[in-house]
Image 1 (spheres, rainbow, N blue to C red):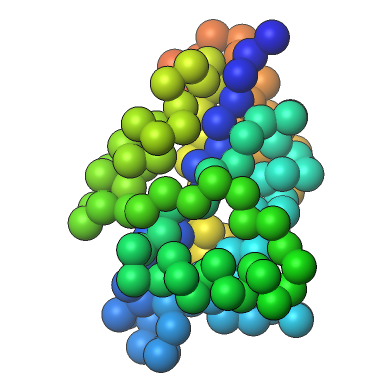
Image 2: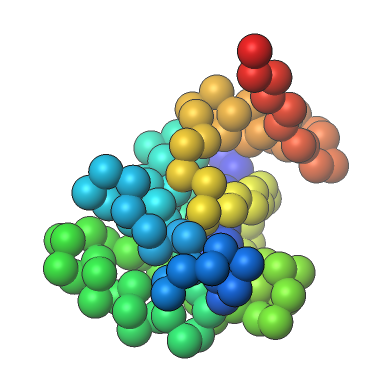
Length: 137
């Protein structure tokens, strides 16, 4: 059985978004986008562990939001100065024995079951990497 690690990267500062908070913390309905992204990876992740990577400046904020909402944030890792460093921090902290590692953007909460399952299945079948392509009509 494959051990799966899902890394949800939300370590950006949000400068380009132009708001007080980075986009991963903005509400979609009544929940932050990041909460929806973490939930999606938990639901569709084929039993894998979900770790969230955050800008160290926002770890306390995120923890407070989760406590207020009664949401278990799961493992949280401090991000680096680049996406690559952030993913590496998560792998170093949580992925030493993972057979499959996925990386998902915490500001993209609308990922569907078919995408996550297809990526996991492709890697489990021997693909060295998998990038889903979704055509919208």
